[in-house]
Amino acid sequence: MKIAPLINQTTKVLPLTLAVAFGLSMGGCASTPVPHERMAVAEAAVARANSTGTSENAASELLVATTKLERARQAVIDKDNALAAQLAEQVALDAQVAELHAQSERSRKAAVESKDAARALSEEINRKPVQ
Image (tube, rainbow, N blue to C red; front, top):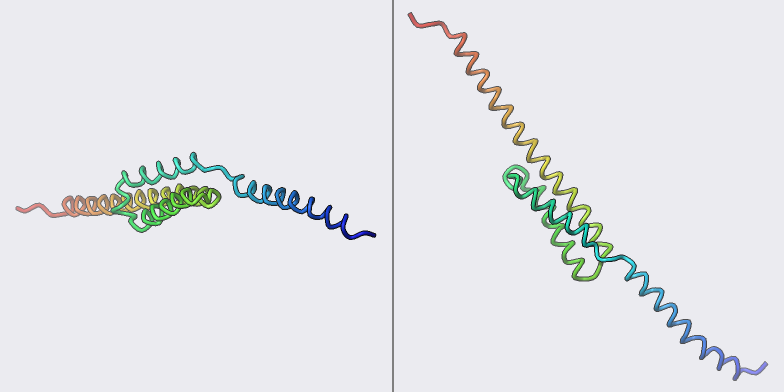
């Protein structure tokens, strides 16, 4: 067996093999498209949550959503589309949690006010008339 022809074949096949491997590895990185739609949904969810008084009643939940939105934006810039998509989905859910928490807090406050008004009315009705 001659070594020279074997080395010659290896030197021809090796670059081709490396090129195919590189192409496949780069294709795996580029296979996740930029999540434009998910980012738009996340942006809209945070905007909606901001407009409902959430910053007053659910500030910490809203902060979680806005912080993740910033991270998702940075992931898009860094071309980490898989992370951006994942964060965008989390942002939409976190913004919804913030909205629901704020709505719950407003409902709780309204219930307390209604209870106080009912108690005051009951006291007024039960008060003996002054003669």
